Length: 177
Image (cartoon, rainbow, N blue to C red; front, side):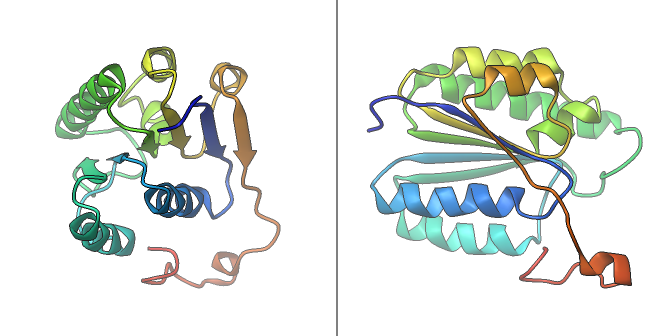
């Protein structure tokens, strides 16, 4: 068990936010911690979910992964179904944080869900305020607001310096997706 849990935010326009959170997941599992990952806006065939599903079989009592989204919405106005899935996900994560049974809770793409209007900034702040003192809370995604950054204990901004997407390279399975 973690003696004191902090709030971490991984944000910015660069690559690596999800990767950092998943690296922390592996480290936490190796230390015997219980981890919950709630992924907004994603559903289905992502390489990290395939791998984490296998990890969940090995770490049966330690790792839970849930997705809250259709997997089709990325930009623009969210559908009613996307909003409904997001609200259900938010409520589920809120309950997980209230119980305090998990050492690490990751709100994957939480900032993006907020930016798109699926959950509110006040929802994310409530998650921060609700977390058990011994739970580490990680929120990922571009667009973290100043209020969220102010409330967090650790904030890392991923900043693109150079990226092959600019040369027309599409997202590659196993590397970006």
